[in-house]
Length: 128
Image (tube, rainbow, N blue to C red; front, side):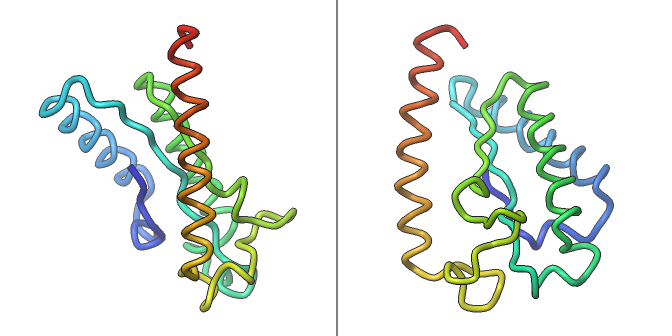
């Protein structure tokens, strides 16, 4: 599951409750589904001026998503590991407006997801 920046700006506690209900519904409808929760993508430094879109807000929501993953025995995948600079902002060359990615950045993301899938399968095989 990957949610974007549009989900931010409201009450984060309500966000977490709603996110949990989505997880519960997926499990109800598809009990054998492998669910991976992905981080919300960071924004560039220039785009992060609004409090709801600040680097700290995105880090807060990602921490909550990671906690949801842990509490539900799910995997958490943090795409910001490959999309951000050393300060935690979206790399400007990977976006055309500070928020949305350019096509080449989606290719990087897709390749990384394939690599993450291998890591997750290895973890599963080792009982983790």
